Image (tube, rainbow, N blue to C red; front, side, top):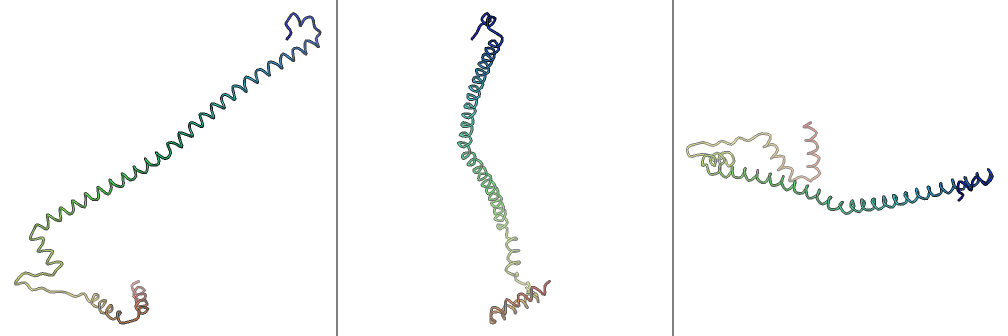
Length: 158
């Protein structure tokens, strides 16, 4: 490289050539530095991306398990609340079954019991009697007749 004093001795063309070479050398050095910086940042960025991806992959399965288990816990808590509610209902029913009047009422409603001196009446619903008669007749007929009658009855109800 030429110094300032050396430049004065050379012709203009030589000075311009030297100036161009110096400028080209400076540009080349600055480009080399930029590329070195870029490659360092790119390497760092690649490593950082690799670390982040590794963490995501490493944490994905445990997070999925965590979310799944939280759902299972909520489901079990809901079932437990339903079971506790059912237990309360059964306790209430048990307490009611200790009462003789309640048992007597159930026997009258479901078993048609009557007390001594009372007269019991059983009312037959005409539609239910007709349906029972039809069911008894249906036993002796072929199955396809029963199916067709079912279609006719369903159509008649509309």
